[in-house]
Image (cartoon, rainbow, N blue to C red):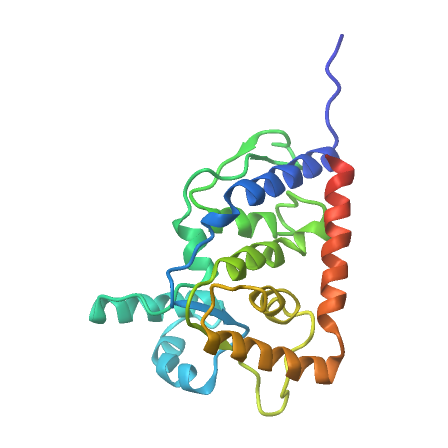
Length: 231
């Protein structure tokens, strides 16, 4: 009896299940070094000043995490210490195990897709070009990874809001606002000082936007319901 070929959508859903299973089994490994965690949506003025040299010497298309990584590498060479351990740093350290994924579309559909680390895997999962996941789920990849990172933070953390004087507040759909702060709020491993900073920021945003975190929780429930449908 001939084997039925899977559709692109079925392969995307298989990848989604593999990613979810990896989060359940390996989510605790998204573990930043204690007292070096940072939640960020941009650079605060003080950090921007320190990194200005790096900003000027790098390609303008460099992403925030890449600029932070370069500045941290330069600092570590001088001090011998890690001062910032971002989500991207942690994911780049994770080499194995990784989610078992296949190409979902195109001429190589069904072929195994390999990655050198979880950072490159995450970027591919979130990529519209690769289309490894259904579109609605690609949009949630960084939210899910950021949630695990915020769950595993320990001690003192830094929070870089990175808003301009004109904008005042971040948009409510930003990962830091929608996911990281509400998760960090429940993290009993954070220092009292950091928990207060988290709580103060949440109150500030709720005063302006309303109960944005209730809406985020609703989104999480919808996503989990989608996961159950394909299992």
